[in-house]
Amino acid sequence: NAGVTQTPKFQVLKTGQSMTLQCAQDMNHEYMSWYRQDPGMGLRLIHYSVGAGITDQGEVPNGYNVSRSTTEDFPLRLLSAAPSQTSVYFCASSTRPLGDEQFFGPGTRLTVL
Amino acid sequence: GQQLNQSPQSMFIQEGEDVSMNCTSSSIFNTWLWYKQDPGEGPVLLIALYKAGELTSNGRLTAQFGITRKDSFLNISASIPSDVGIYFCAGQPTTPLVFGKGTRLSVIA
Image 1 (cartoon, one colour):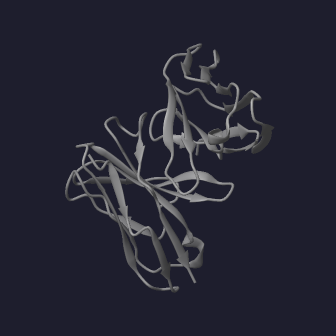
Image 2: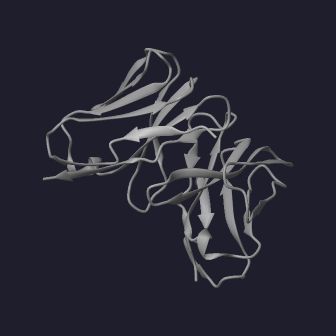
Image 3: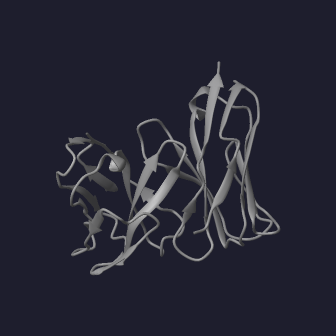
């Protein structure tokens, strides 16, 4: 199993550009989530999904959209990138509802100029 | 929203020393988790705790779920250079999971 994969590894955007961060898992996990990590701020939840077709907002959802059309994939969309969205983004999946044993991807480091 | 206070923020220790870090919450949690993040990687689960008072070990790591259900502790014995990284506590009052801000551990050989 590849576990949780994320692409791209690194990305530089200009303010106002849009892009999609990809996340996929091959563990048949129902629950997937997106976090951002900023220095000194820990991991903050952006959006999460408890199954295909179901998504919900986390702590910091503004500026981000998600969809969950399949169990495997959970892309994160930035509609109009802003410098405040410069961060490292982690996708995670788990068998239980946002509880323990979340498996994290390797992260995407995003810089918005 | 829920907040976790994790301390210390950073630690510099000599190889072979023991390490202690903790997390506290203003509300009761049903689950406490400890993760480690190596540089450039995603967090990896170290220990999961499910019951108040529970004490669980994983090699040189020991974690405890506080009796009040509002705190948890992680101890690392006889630290080695590969212990370097950021340690996160995470708790679950209901859903979703809440993370502390992390303890950055540096080990001096």
